[in-house]
Image (cartoon, rainbow, N blue to C red):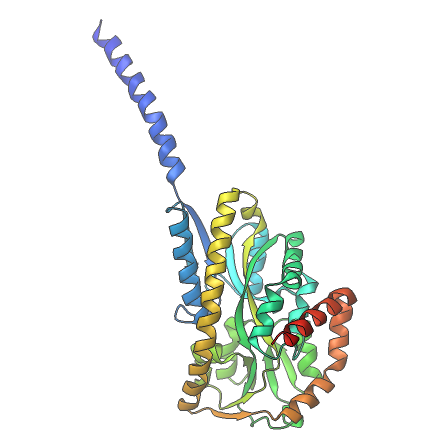
Length: 339
């Protein structure tokens, strides 16, 4: 056998061996999932996002890796939603309120004073009504996995303590880019200013707006106490977050990969809710220690707000559909009766 022939045989053998090795290397290359959120890494959503990423990597044996990116570095909720729909980003967690422009049924969760407590919210969100609303997202290019808790929203501002409905009059209040929130606070007398969350601190600092409304945890983790004096405990809306996947990305995954993401999302949901509720108790005490003046809105004034917002509730019912409105109210009543 000539030297040239031996060289050709050796080269062919090397190619034959290399082919399966290359295929194997390609098979184990992890799927990288870019996952965005608006708050800081040290926030409740940051901690739960980290746990989600760890669970995905563990359950997939390292074949799926989640890169969590906070501080709205990938954009506002609205911008990230559009990136998911277009397939430019794989995952995110954000407020259901910013999805209303995409899926009208999401407005049901913006109903003022819908839930009395977190237990009622869990039962309804994790039940048939919550799933029905979440499934509507797929028509628009998004897949909802689970609802997290942002918490009951409360008012802060730099003008005055809110003790009566009339105290809201004229306050420039930042609200989410959501028609229900805009109309609700206009109805209550505020000058409602829709802004992305990523612009909020600067708007408060420069007095572009007087106040805002968010759960205690967000007020603390976003350091709003540095630029806000008054906090009024109103619990006017229970605010869920939702973990989303790009449908374009989801449709390219196997059933096993779907299960990995869904199981990890459920674990993160259970962790996040417990963490958020424990942190809320600590956050209120810490906000007080930071110098915020805190007052509780009297039940009679909360009822006046409910009555004032009756037209908004009627508008929500019309917007989401009377069937869904009645179904949701029935689910809340059932959860309330099961105490």
